[in-house]
Length: 284
Length: 312
Image 1 (cartoon, rainbow over the protein chains, first blue to last red):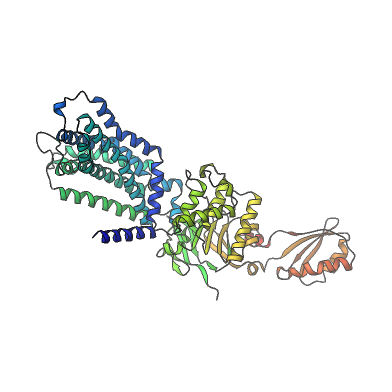
Image 2: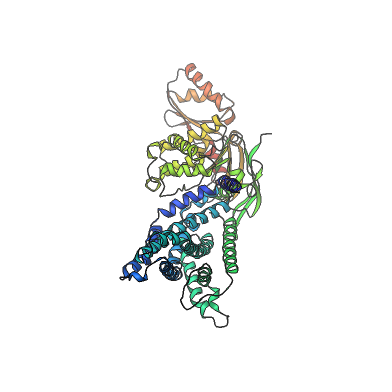
């Protein structure tokens, strides 16, 4: 089984090399990581952890232990993920990074260079999107890991608590953050494929997403209008994976697999539309 | 029949109501340097945009190496190198890093791309700037880098849009020499777009002239300028004796005195080489001292201006 997986992985890597996606991923990843926006986003993602650390008061020894660490992590991570790490501050920065993926190349004039090389336009779009995903992993994982570390130390959970958090809950939290940021990024990349200036793509994405998140939950003619926002499904994801977000019971109801399918389908649709737009666009 | 590397069929491009290129039928044979001439705004860059797949024709077809550009773009671009009119590069990359990236997009491995990048930087005279950031390069240096980028994939066809713009005279000479060398020694077909006629005249085997979006002349440079007379100024010690002798020659179409010691003559371009052989003999026979001998104008320039209707 392991040999089959390794074989399949090798074939995938060779195919990706042949269509030059790996080259695009590497270059785009390096470009994003060396940018000021990335460094700013990394600092902002860690900010809630710093504030949490500074706000911690003396914790009674009776309140320590692995179980307490888990509960505290669920509560804090859930709040940070839904309000901050996939909330407006992180959305804005993800949008700013994603807006440059295609529109940045048009603005600089370098898209002409790319499409006159023997590389498919779909490889360009997919490669840049994958680089964006990798960057979001690099941005979000330290923040979650740091939170797990702070809680394990503050609540005296020790190595047992930390290893338990890292092996399961940090990964779940990372999954939720990625689902959120990647979806916002995919939407922004669609706009980036349509505009020639990253600023226009960023402004349009941010305006649309902000208005959507403000208006839709207030639509009384929809049954449970909050269900039509991404943050609801991220909350559902966290609860279904074991996070206890509220001591009073579940906050989110729904079918996890339908939510995941919807998010996955939305991202696929956004990617396909981005590729179609790039294929149709002329480069003057 | 020579195989054509580039073939277009009624290539047409409209931007709304405005026609940028109209029914252009290019034929670029293999292994030649094809000079694509036209004034500013004639449609040169639009035509090139359609050749490399950046622009979609309103109608018409583009075939490179016998393949349709829009259906087989990736396969064609493996054999094509392109230099845009305004060379661009990733500003935050280092020169060698940028060239290496372009090489990897051509399918070279990391090591091969690095080696090829270093070789090409030497070839275009940018070897000492390998570790500099692209944004610090001058316009001329970026032009050379753009030329190197076009060569990184060892192309069989080079499409160069104004390759000598932003270059000083020495650099222009070097680049044109390299283009000629690539065509002669490596068999690289080169399609150069330019409005600098003497440069095109110097390196090109074939020429196409475009004006107001239409191809108004195309063919081997010698065939095209065959109808154009060639003019010279000769300054000698006794111009009258030279005039009398030159009037006997049937390839001399017109000969008049010019100033105190000059003779202006027009010769049939097809037999102009006879002048080069017989003039020294005439000077020796008549015991005339030669002070100056220089051509006036460029036959290609005259053809170009005549086709554009500037003079008849």
